[in-house]
Length: 198
Image 1 (cartoon, rainbow, N blue to C red):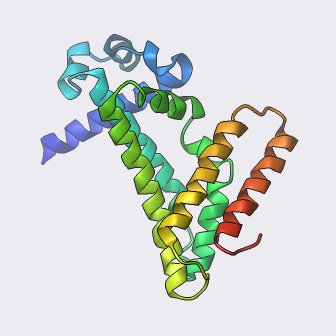
Image 2: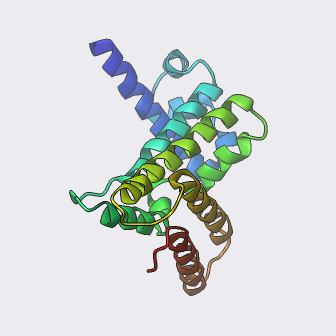
């Protein structure tokens, strides 16, 4: 038991260092040697926990999943499913994505999906999981007749397509006023998918 928790603790520490360094230098520029130096750790210890860089990338994608889970973690204990759902939608269409995961890391991982089938599969699993979380919130509202739509899975998928497209485009906009204007527009469209208005 102690060994397992030590291993998990060390792996998390290594992945966090990988993430922090990748923010500064880009994923492609990070090596086991650089991470070992950053952590003041023997490189053989990095290799002990991660056989290769691909395994580290899986760990990084898992870190992204865990970070994005915070979008869905409504701190208040909300009993009303519609309030929960709208709170999550407000989180999805907010700057919170940027707080939890740096855009450059996310898009670096995304770019790797075109070159590595295993990474593509792992990254796709991330997206499926995010959609499933949203789908459940939508289905809870349908079940309690708080929204009237036919298919929670389809609605969650469309909302994520809007979100993914929005952040891809918004990452290129520096003007904050314009950024907020576009973000509000995309959020309105996401609410419309559910028959809701802001």
